[in-house]
Image 1: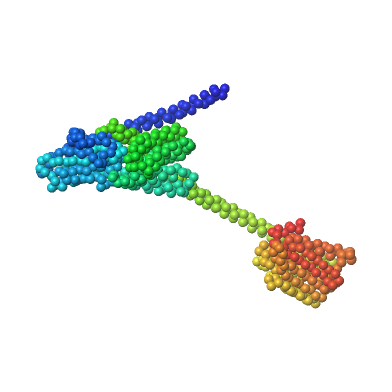
Image 2: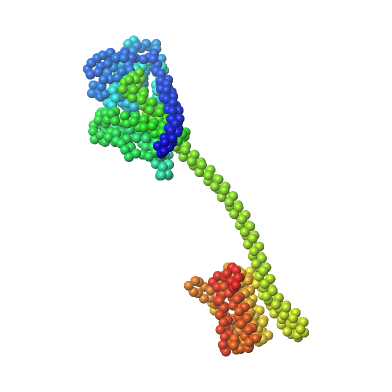
Length: 638
């Protein structure tokens, strides 16, 4: 059953792969055809009216007739370079603006002489002598050298490999007829590669910065390294023999296969493939060329480059084509299609160059793989930069959306906070209203009931007056508790001191007010009016008890601030010199005293304070220890 299920699952998968791969391969075949036609159609045209094809060539001390373009028999001929000799006809009537000699293609270097006088030596321009370049050369022929009729022209071809020497058709004629062809080739094979290399260097810097910013994405760093190698190969001038700078030559020759291996690494990383352990073998040919160039003589690294470097480049291009094809089958996105098409174009150009190297295509020795390869790197780098910029735009857009959403959330929070503040204000007002109603009911209400009861029973006016004064005192206490004292309890105690002094004056009792610490009591920002009224009522109760029951002649109030491990706290003490009290006395009196003490302790607990009371024959002391932080609710006492 499992085998049947596996076959059933494998068949649709194969069909999917075929349905995606076949159109892609057909598209690549079309690109191959278009590239071949483009290479044929875009080849620059030369002025055939001024072409010199028939030459006599002296090579290896042998003279023979040759027809240009011509490949030399040797890959290295500096001591005895091939000498090409021909003749051209000049008429003074055709002089015009002057005559020139134009060489569209050669390798490695040329020296041109007209009538025995050298007019062109390409060895003065190192970049003109590289075998992978298609640098044209043109030189004006001084009018004093031209003779009416036949004129001799000789071309010495210096060859130092790694390819055989090559000399394309030589053109001699009016400068106005040769210059446009020279400028066209210069634009295609000199200016355009420099432009691509400049773009490549700029993109290499940008990609290196992107990699430094995003170390977890090595694809940017790998492509930047490949571009740097390409820029080095493009801008560092190669050595021109007989100069012995083999180390520089080794760097230049080794950069191409190493650069191609880096591109394969880039493709694997870009498409999410796992880099195999044996993949590092791709770097071996380039490293071999580099090491041999550092140790061996000048000819050896060029030979190794021809044997190892060029096939490595082709292998890397083929592997890159396979990687992109697999990515197209798996991903079906624009990036894999684009890179796949670019790799196909470069691979076709490389095949075209190999046909030229193998002398299969001998019509025009033009190397285009380097130019197409640089164009591919520029396109890939630009694509990555564009993708990075698009990601930044998406991040900016997301950040803008996030800011807008945060703004909306902030507005909702503000509205919610306003509602909660209104609710809290309403709750505070309701709590304050409830407190006032309770205080008025417990204090003023009780006093008014006493006044009514005394009036109905026909008591004397003095008793009713005292009850009315007590009611007025309680009303003032409730009103004073509404004042904002900013958390400073000393302000409320100052008002209470005035009332207590007025209360004690008719009884001829002295009030001793003593503040033991300079600051009095600590500030309490959380202090509320209901805290104040409870504390003041405790102090009123203590003074009233001293007047009515203790028969005291002197009352002392002490205020101080003490410290413990948790911070400062205030203490208020009320001490009288009365006779004291004991619970084991008159039952009615004891019950009334116990009820008063319970009320005092209940009020203290509601404020989070601690009430201590001591009494003996020498007097009574009521000590109120205030909390370090007053509670928010007045339900602490239960």
